[in-house]
Length: 160
Image (cartoon, rainbow, N blue to C red; front, top):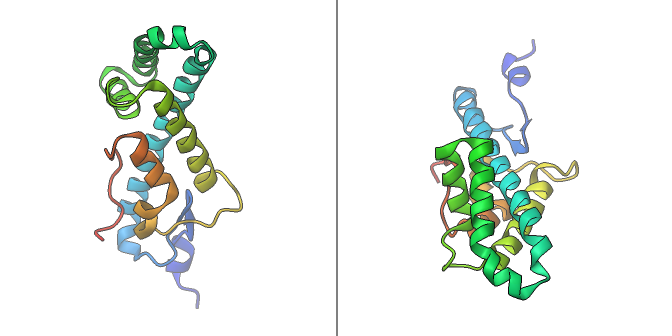
């Protein structure tokens, strides 16, 4: 006789290894994983916008100093258009922070690093799925933390 649990339990769900997760916890955990991916994809898209707005002016240092507030405003407008007023502002604040904390150049470098680590972890076919308990120790999570100044817009996957 075949156990239903084996068929109902996904081993790999969106880059997470759920093979040893208790069936009663799967639904809640999968909802959290969906939210994590939704938020990380939002961050990734805003990072791409930041890079596309910033890189064309990066070569001109004089223009760059004057443009930092404009870059922040353009990203804010773009985020509000894409994600609505509240969520757009929240994610821009995470990605850009305050202009006096880090320069746009540093944030752009962090944005590139985040995109790379996200794609490596979740879009590369050869990357092993990560166990939910190890997510906060992953490169993608740590890179996101550097980008957001230690703020975490993601739900916790484990109690550990």
